Length: 219
Image 1 (cartoon, rainbow, N blue to C red):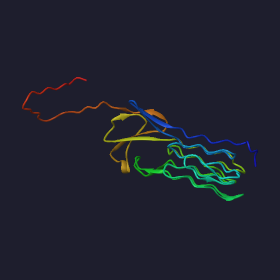
Image 2 (image 1 turned 180 degrees about the horizontal axis):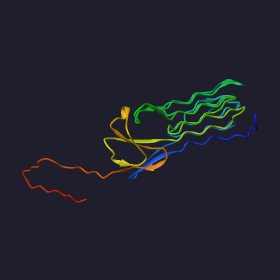
Image 3 (image 1 turned 90 degrees about the vertical axis):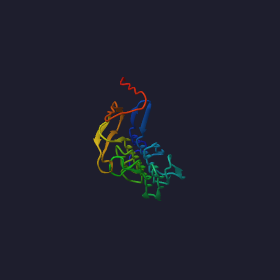
Image 4 (image 1 turned 120 degrees about the vertical axis):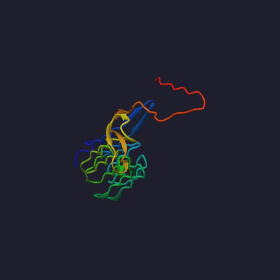
């Protein structure tokens, strides 16, 4: 294998944010996968946590953000948005990295999509998988023997939708389909802002009152 120091953590997934008025909403990117050396994977916040590295160790060690337990040559799975990561198993070259924790399913986009899955733990000799951008998944951990670099976490995503026609600007705008039919959606995969259009409420029909009536048509 390569030199023990010739490896690197993956990169954490980028956060996605929107700003509206005085409110900022952030979807945290997935955590990075740990390199194949004596390191822990990072926490992914709202995204999935990265998997830990596959490396020898004389004692069990917990991974941050509800990860599983690492064993010799088998990393733990990173915690997901809805469950903890699995523990590594086996010994020597016959090891299995822990499976990343489960994410959360949401159909705001019109179809069921799983977000925030934890990264899988590294094994004795395996290639780590990067988290998927737009899902906030954690990156897989690096292996002990070769392919030691941890994988990158996936970027986060923010989706805003409302019923009716176009009433705002910002992000990638689409008309909803599937379970989002009739909605207008704004999707953000990086920093952005949402601006609502001015509301115009036309009045029609007869208006009557027993007393005086005044209407303010100014701003």
